[in-house]
Image (cartoon, rainbow, N blue to C red; front, side, top):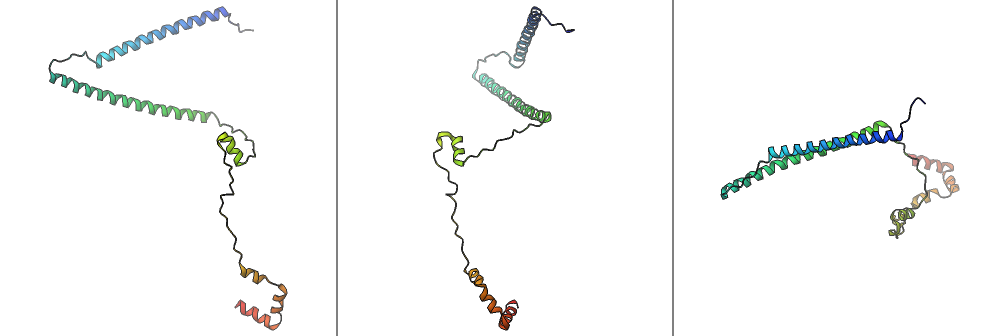
Length: 176
């Protein structure tokens, strides 16, 4: 209750005063810019006096071309400074954003979608070819080794071969 609210007429009156002050400041700034421009033009662009002879006219043209080159160099330097400062401003903005805090990545929903459906969603009606990923794979046939099949054979036959002295003799010979 201690804070008193302004009446609408008072608020409108203050707003109009602020606008008048701002308008006056803008006019002063515009006149200052015009005066600065005129002063610069007087310093850098003297009044043009056209010479009578051809030789003097050529000298004037050479002088003008030289002045144009100087102005172009200055313009290029200023442009490069502006580009450099813009890059620095962008880098500083990014740093400020990083310092403010980390961005939370939203939790993505798992979507079950085939490759065809995904391409259909991305490309719309342009996608007409069905994408069969297994169709382009190279066919590889497994080679079955016949030696392993022979070694596996009947287990009873193996035991009978190793039974007795002949079998023990074969075991020792194969190990050595």
